Length: 126
Image 1 (cartoon, rainbow, N blue to C red):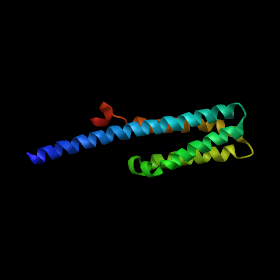
Image 2 (image 1 turned 180 degrees about the vertical axis):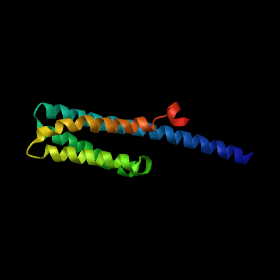
Image 3 (image 1 turned 180 degrees about the horizontal axis):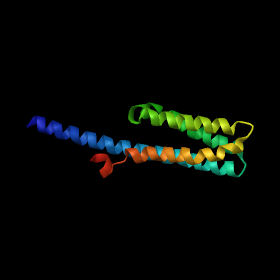
Image 4 (image 1 turned 135 degrees about the horizontal axis):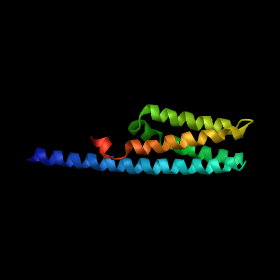
């Protein structure tokens, strides 16, 4: 009977960990998306210094969660976000920062897809 209780406790712990992971990644992706959306608005208004500041804040937030991300998120997804943020900040610091405008949509969509891949759904269970 001890084995069954231990198995049940382990199953509950795994389920709770999965829920926490989903909650954490939702908060992370929302925060990054909000920063990038604000940066996009600044970029559209021609305020490139402020756009760069918000994009760098998003990149820093992404870097701060790198230990978590490297454990729980696929490496190809991590690399895509890394490259997207690097490309965005590079264009914003270039001589033609207005070229950053098309980069926002794909980067924000990719970041939001990280949560979509992790959340519980019938498709992810079966």
